[in-house]
Image (cartoon, rainbow, N blue to C red; front, side, top):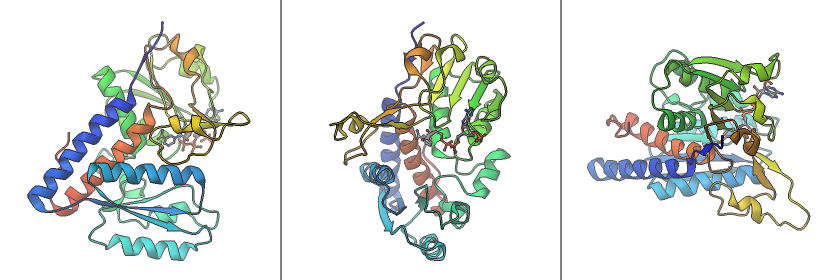
Amino acid sequence: MTATIIDGKARAARLRQEVAAGVAALKTARGITPGIAVILVGDDPASQVYVRNKNNACKEAGINSFEIVKPATITQAELLSEIKRLNVDARVHGILVQLPLPAQIDPEAVINAIDPAKDVDGFHVVNAGKLAIGKPGFVPCTPAGCLLLLKEQLGNLSGKHAVIVGRSNIVGKPMAQLLLMESCTVTICHSRTEFLVQETRRGDILVAAIGKPEFVKGHWIKPGATVIDVGINRRAAPAGDDGDSARSNESAKTKAPSGTLVGDVDTAAASEFAKFITPVPGGVGPMTIACLLRNTLQAACAIKGVAFPLA
Ligand code: NAP
């Protein structure tokens, strides 16, 4: 079997157009322009690229993007007071703090200082709790994007066995909640899972969110399964490569760190077993940004008491 590639880039482009239309309608009808504040602490090159890509995507969708850059030496108290300021800034409907943060800052304290109504990343404990009990709130962008791809490819997910490798708060756990809400039977695997391959081979749907390059091998996949590769791992560039290869990445218009991107799945080998598979790059990554735009429009609508125009 040679798997069909799930084109995340094309799906994300459609979602971005839908968001842009929603933003334009909100401006025309109510004079409201959604705005997001993106806080970048320090000068990690990969984070800089992610933040610029997010800002560019916001601008293209007509969303105001306020980029706030802070030195790596910022104290937690200073960062918290910045968030406090943004929580009451009427131009700002969404607040995103780019992770990781420097060691002196507790990311949980920072995330939970964001007004849950502006928590467009969906990481705040209030939004995580809402997702856990099936109430509307902000859903983390990466698993939300994965779910959109799965539903578009497979339609009704009810009764399917979904296996997720990874149990992080930002990908694995919310992915499990979302698939459970779709009435999948969900197995969550992690670094202590015994007989991992036996588990992954049971998945009609396999989501890999591990952070290890090409970790999932072909024979780990149930024949005919749908594979969602969340991983983004940078492989060192061969000597002499100035980073051009990495600029084939999702939407990098700025100079990216050098190296090529690979996922958590050995795509070529997995394609021999899977029916559908997401590529890296061009799969989940573009969906993450598109869902961030969607969440920002959702935040602006909710704060202003306007019906959210998207499905
Ligand atoms: P994370 O917080 O490091 O979590 C990794 C998970 O993988 C953990 O639950 C860990 O288990 C599990 N794991 C590690 N080694 C394992 C092993 N040998 N066998 C089974 N499970 C193992 O990572 P994350 O933030 O969820 O991100 C995962 C990947 O997705 C990374 O490559 C990241 O760059 C990528 N990512 C992509 C996007 C996107 O937009 N495409 C967004 C976010 C993240 P334990 O809990 O037991 O340690």
